[in-house]
Every structure is written in C-alpha cells, then in structure tokens.
Image (tube, rainbow, N blue to C red; front, side, top):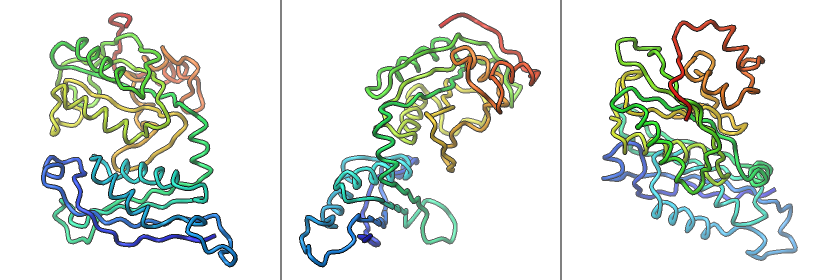
Length: 293
C-alpha cells in the first residue's frame, strides 16, 4: 500500500468559534496522508493509477475558501470524506489541521485536530442513510414554551433533519444552580441524514441558540433563553473538547430521563430499562408535566 503525502500546506482562512477569528482570519496548516490500494506501479506508470496531489490541494483550497467552520473537527471530517470520494483507490485518509497562531496566551507552536477515515467506515456510513438523533432542550427566560417551540421549528426546517417525535413539556427544578427560575424541558427525536456530521449538527444548534438571544458568556448552568444538547447521534461515540456523545450527564439528569423515556420507553441506561433506571435513582429534583407537545 502506498501513501500520498501533503506536508505543511499553509492557507489563510476564516474558521473558529470566536468572532474575531471569523472576521480577521488566521493561518492554518494542513497535513494530509492518503493511503492508496495499489501494491506496485512497476507495470503501470499512469497518473490514473494513483491520486493526484495537485487535485487534493485544489480540493483543500476550495473547501477552505467556500465554507467557514466553527470547529476544526468539522472541517477535518468534511475534508476527509471529500478526499475519500475522489478515487475508489483511496483506502484511508488522515487529515490534520492546525492553527499556527492560535488565540491562546501560551508558549506553543500550534493547536489542531486530526481525523482518520477508513474506507470501511465510509461504506458503513453511506449504507445507513440516516441516524436517530436525540436532543434535549430547556428554557427558563421569557416565554419558555414559546422559546421551545421556536427552537423546534428552526431545527425542523433544516433540509437534513426530519423531526420524528417531541416529548411533552415538563416543568423542572434547576439542578446545578438553584437560585434561578424553573425550566421548561423537552426531548426531541429526529432522523438526520448521514451527510450531516455530529460536529456540523453542533454548529447548527449553537447558531440557533445565539440567534434566539443566548449570550456566549452565559454562566454555566445559569439562566438561558434556550439550551440545546445532543444526547445521542445514532451509535456514534465522540469524546472531544467540544462534543461528547452520548452526553455524559444523561444518567444524572431527571429532566432529561423523564421526557426521553416518554418518546423512547425501550431505551437502556446503564444496562437497565430507562424507566426502571429513573425510578431506582430516586431523584430529588421535581419534574412535572405541563402539557403534551
């Protein structure tokens, strides 16, 4: 198996979570490894028998110019799939993207992410078509029910998302910061097209939160006009600085477990049926039904 390398390819782009990153831009360094399913070029010296690194460079430049990503995780995943789609000879792609002048006041050379994609994984993902995704939503500022309905409406309008079920609305006690108003909470189940990665979904949900007035510096677990968390994304497991799936706090949150058990009563938590798990936990926080969705 051969490996095509693109090393230390530097481009200027406008990717990042902070507003000044989107406005002012910064330098990014790309390192790509492409594994070719070809054992010998002895009798075949044609460019058609490999992948042209000039074409890959063009692909990187196009994606860097035409799209702006909040997360390098999303950028690297999308780029890896695009490279994989360039030729059936490609068996594996490793994409590393680094910020060479990151907005961090530390003595370091760069920060970045690395994404590894195997042909087998790509085929599996292509075969699924859609993933069942569960979202938890809460609001305790203003018209709470209106906020929830507005968020669900925005989510349902996305072309890659089909809303399958929405739980009843529940009035819940604040769990972590007690000195604040009660929340209204729901859980939504949606079918999400395979083309829409978990990190792209995260970016979309964050954009809804900010469009609705949530502040970027909101106190953690404090009051918010809307909060949207990804609970599950099919059978995918992710552990990163930005996103963990399944959501690690599901087992301790009664305000998630009760609406989740309503729309998925056969779900298991910690090896137990979700309803039995919830009963056995004896949560102290009250969760009361307000009305059906």
